[in-house]
Image (cartoon, rainbow, N blue to C red):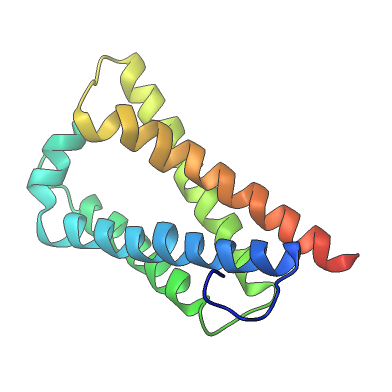
Length: 142
């Protein structure tokens, strides 16, 4: 946006910002979470407060891999594909947040289960992306 010689409209600026958020917070974060759950499952499980050695770790790894790849595909696939990726990722992360709150109520105060990972990563950032997506698609209709 800052190096473009073309003056961008608010909708175009929102689209650029939305794409960056999708690629970084869904694409990169999804692949990073995949690597942790797939290649360091016991360390990640300990940080979340889960028992180690669970085959469920691999399932979470694959779910994160799928969202990571979808986030990167948003660079090449436009239109309502972005909406599908954002909505799916929000459901996944908000569901994870719910699970973390349930675990917190049972006394699990593990670092990856609480704090910034919970509030920013699972709630606030997905909410901001969802709001920006809603604005972007709504402003395109006008």
